[in-house]
Amino acid sequence: MPLSALQSIRTQSPDGRIIEKIGINPIKRFVRGYWVVSDPLTSALAAQGTAGDSANLRFSIDTQGHFDWAYVIGNSTAAFSIEFYDAQKNRLLQNRPVHSSGVVGPAIRPFRLPKPYFFNVGDSEREITAVIRNLSPLPNTVRISLYGRRFYHKEMPPDMARDVERRFDEGEREYSFWLVPKETAFDGTVPAIAAGARATLTFETDNKADIEIDKVMLSSDGLFDYQLRCGDRSLKSWSNGDVESSSGFGDALFPFILGDSFLLERKRQILLEIRNTGVAPISVFATASGKQMQYR
Amino acid sequence: MGNLSPYVEIPRPGGEPGLAVNPLKEAVNGFHVVSDPLTVTLTAAGTVGSEDELEFLIDSNGHFDWTSIVGTQTFGTPAYFIEFFDTGRQRKLQNRPVSSDNVVGTGQRLFKLPEPYFLNVGDGMRVVTAKVRNLLFAGNITLRMALYGRRFYVHDAAPAVALELNRRWGGGERAYSYFLSPQEYPVDGTPPVVGAGGTTQFTFKADSDADTDIHKLMVSSTGSFTFTLRERSTNRLLMTDAVLGSLGMGSAQFPFYYADTLLLERDKELVMDIVNTSGANNRIAVTLAGRLLRYER
Image (cartoon, rainbow over the protein chains, first blue to last red):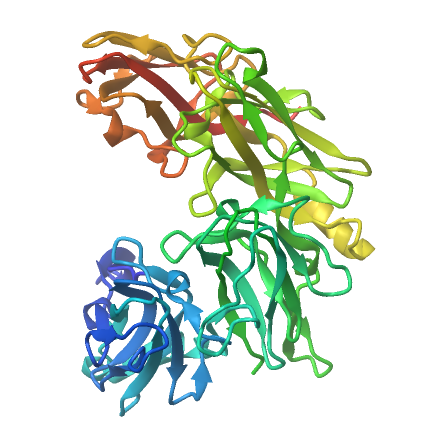
């Protein structure tokens, strides 16, 4: 959410009256939209399953100021999987590699993180890394950047710099997280579902945090019918019958936003029951995105 | 529509504030209500099977707060026309059947109702029906539709939670979503054809028993056109000159939102003057979506 450029200022006139007027928000001039591009800038991935089908990207946030990561922007010539890792916090931002259709959007429709991810650079640098793997039998050229707000706190007056850290750095109890079915292999691939067959995919939280799921995304090579179900004893379905995949899932550009965010408590499951209604096998890459919430 | 907070603040034994899972959250869930039958095939316009009825049954598991419409149809086929009816309230949600291009979205871009429609199941069930018609296409259209929203599992919930859910959402039926089509459309909703270079006038009229607060404009047309909007009662034009249709109206997936909602008071009229600039016959289906506002009785 942008900082307001203007703010109300209260002053006192010489005769003691309180005067309220509008002035420029002093923080605003120290905050700028900012792209953190990857190193290397572009990755040419070899065909899936061959040497060179993966690459490591480094996103370095230098000491100029804090970075409030809000979007993932990029393009590629084919699908790939991605895994983000915050080295300083020793934190993975997903449980398995995530299909690019659930993570990366172009500038016209960037993928918005459910919760901006604040990098407090302090007096040093921060770094986030991403491992990308080609999911296509063809070579794949990938370019990704992180977009957000840069807070040039080193140029701010000390009080203002402390205020920024107080207001934004406290949000680290919850952070964006991508949850994919545990049937996804650690190289990001998924088992194919035969024509006419049924399969169940399981989204499961780990035992250290709850996840509040906001949106669900999908990539598949065919339409299918599905039901989502709570994995607890109630097995409560999220619909009164089969829903077609295009009516209940979006992608990174146009995600399907849930009617009410779903709180998946620790070690709980959501079951995605799939019925392939097509005449060919399909590979279903489903992704749920939300906020991982940890108690202090 | 805001999400319910997943946590609530509770006092710890020492009096310090602590966090716990919001008990209401566990009783609320995003939910698709699919139709019965799940899929229908409408035969060519004018044939016996060109219309059908879909039934959306909200069972007694809990209330349903309907927020969006999603659906699919045979790829490449033109729009069909829909008429929603809430059987419990004996209430139509439009003055004429509306084009599916204007009110049915997809999982990626849902059509959001201007006001969530709350279906309180009480101890029984509620049903919304949708009459669907193929009015224009000479072939078959196979379609599938679902209503999406929030389910409130009041019957599963602890009594205190159920009471709180009913207190917060159980009422709220004074305003509800409504689709407004031009008065000039026949009662089956068939949009008229405007000849090449021709002009026409559409009149949107609020009911005599409720005000309509219009939020967004959608259109489905077979060619380009320009339009002006004018309030009949004040003769006030809502633009300096004619605006191209594609610059002032959207679709179900990408509606055009008014900068500020337009309150059309009861019996008042909004006049749309249209010029067909396409150079060919042009069938123009316009829908305004808003909220019908009734005073408390």
